[in-house]
Image 1 (cartoon, rainbow over the protein chains, first blue to last red):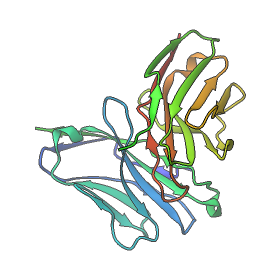
Image 2: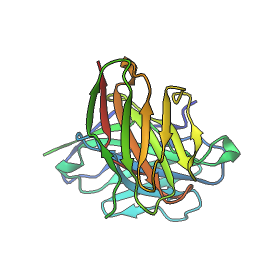
Image 3: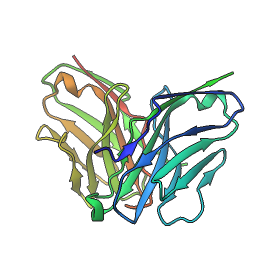
Image 4: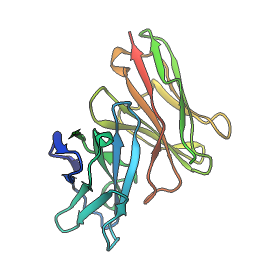
Length: 118
Length: 114
């Protein structure tokens, strides 16, 4: 079974608009961490934002925020005021502990390709 | 800002040859990882390394793969006898801690096996 599901293979957004990239996860652990990474066409993986399962507030980092809905097991990335440079692949990842068979090794989703139109 | 560096950025090799991919993790990080990404596909875990030994490995990491930390800074991935299906982008990553620490990735080595 997929641990991380990103249902949107591709997304389009107009420059300066906000966009939400979906991520749902599957774990029985109470303690886990969720991460988002950006991969531009040049190939590097850039860490964007982290949300811990016990964090009461949604994480924010500049124009990135994480809409964390624990009961729904979703951790959607919201990018506000999109810029042309935001065009990239975006990966959601999760670290979970041994309680649910994990080993703290981050598992990645298949990614969502975001294209920002001028 | 400190970063993970990987060399070479591109490597072309013939099937059956050995390759060594090199990485210098961030200096105060304790956990090191190799991932690979076949073109346009999922980022797959290969192996993690802590305290000078392998802490976890995936089913992909078979006997033809090995990792080493030969000195205090370098972290290498060796593929003993490359196959065509080993062609991929290989990422090295490091993290300060285990649970809530993000992985910081290098820029990757694109390996092409011909």
